[in-house]
Amino acid sequence: MRKNIVAGNWKMNKTVAETEQLVADLKSKLQDVDNGARVIIAPSFVSLTTAVTAVKGSEIEVAAQNMHQEANGAYTGEVSAEMLKSAGVNTVIIGHSERREYFKESDELLASKVDAVLANGMEVIFCFGETLKDRKLDNQLLEVGSQIKKSLFHLPAEAWKNIVLAYEPVWAIGTGETATPEQAQEMHKFVRRIVSKKYTDELADDISILYGGSVKPNNAKEIFSKPDVDGGLIGGASLKADDFLAIVNGF
Ligand code: PEP
Image: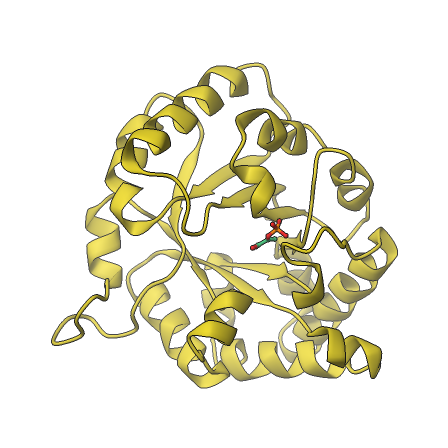
């Protein structure tokens, strides 16, 4: 069943103490919000257990920003699905454009990360999006279609109940530039169409598709009002409780 979701990607921000503080602020202010949206935060690895403890007694969920695809072994500095699960995390962001760009994560690698998350009974927030160059060449649908097909279309239909999609045009991330609500709607509708072609209309209709890219309190409502936009993946504006909650209030 499709749900509205606002997920905050904290990236490499906030110490453990700052995590505790931000969760406390979010918790107290979220009490006044009751629109049925799922609220997810994704702090850094070192703050995950603190966040999991701090959100207790609220509806806030905790996600990880990344994960290694192998179950365990000699992968210095990496974190596995089982470790995340043992820390109380149920959702993992996979395929963020910063991981694709700075850490050279390929579509194939992302497919194996998706498999590892799902094999551990957790949920994936799968990010995809075109670069400015793709958009200028009017290649955005082709590029996004290719990213989704290569990393997700090997999945059996039943696996999709644990997939959330996040369209994040690379040119709109952290730039202050936002896709127009129409551009977001066009892409989300396209994604639902290719998923429905590969699987079924019902499956495509059930997926939550988030938009990400400079979503702020002043533009969230308009973007979220589009029929195929089911919420947002929020970077910069998720680091301040008031801004994040204003975005949650955008439904
Ligand atoms: C992101 O990194 O997922 C993101 C959408 O960032 P921002 O909101 O800062 O553009």
